[in-house]
Amino acid sequence: MHKTSRSGPLYRIASPEDAPAIARLDRTELDDAHKTRRPLDPGRLSEEMRDNRRVWALSQRGGEILAAVSITLEAENRLGKIHRMLAAPFQDNRHELLNGALALLMQELRRRDSVDVVYCTTRTVTLEQQELTLEHGFKVLGVFPSAVSADPSKLNGLSVWYAPDVLSRKRYSGFAIHPAVEPFYALARRACGLGELPKASIPRLPDLSMDLPAIERIEAPLFVAEKFRGLRERRKLSVNFYPFQTPNVLFTSPDQGIEVFAAFFPATRFAAILGEHITVSVNPIALYRALSDRLHEYGVAYIEIINDASDASSIEAILRAGYAPCGYFPCLRSDGETRRDYVVFARSLERTGDLHPAGPKPYARYLQEFCAARSSVS
Image 1 (tube, rainbow, N blue to C red):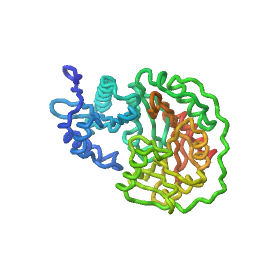
Image 2: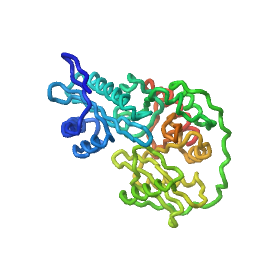
Image 3: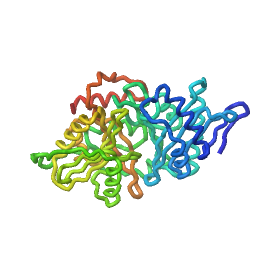
Image 4: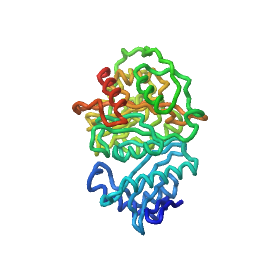
């Protein structure tokens, strides 16, 4: 698919043969703002395009690629994530080049009808680049304050695009919202045109008097990933959804009655808790606090957890363990014929200074609510 004008750049969908040129463009950006990530590997890029796991849209003039935008695809959940936005540093019209490539990429996704939802975070793009997505129907649905990312600021954003009728026809809405999450749902409801949800009563957690056993860390990425895959295939994980991430660290009790999987990224000191396999009675608050301590000892400064929005009991435990909601993501996970809402939680393990609650538009309201929520759980 091509789109061009007589004097303007050519926009086209990349082929596997473009992988070396895309990798060269990527290296030109690594010299400046993106030092926290590894350079793209041409061989892997080519393989991902052949397998339809990643789609790139390019902007070029003559034979030179000037900009590129990519999306990673997860077929099982009909989910996509904006992966990279690259533009040659010497180009004065970077905004135009990226915008044109993004427009073509979204057009290609609609043509393929392969995704219901696409999201973008500033983990791999800057805030300025993310704001381009808002010109293509994406909605701001959260922030990730204090996380190290591709953007130099302490404010990091979440924007989301929905295919037509996904929110109205596929969204599961038969639940009550936890009161602490309701302010974030109210923002998402206005952005996405959703209906109101009743407020849930704050749930009473089960007996919390039992002692937590010692929690030890296993650093064996291939072993951890394979164990996670096996448990997930056998449906043995009580929490098993965090898109586009593979665990590389396992936290376990000596008898393996508690197994919690996490992904850790040393360059950004970021970790995400991805899944749990628990076969014994456990105090969930003590467990989440212990995990925070072990991760901090491991060098982590910022942790994220996502949880089904209808699971008020788990949300209450996460809150009481010191995590604050920072975003609300309708229709994130596919569940048969419906899609489930998720809440994003964050916890900073080191003092990061004050976050200005005004923040840049359109992220300000989410930042204000996060600051209020953080004060109530800290």
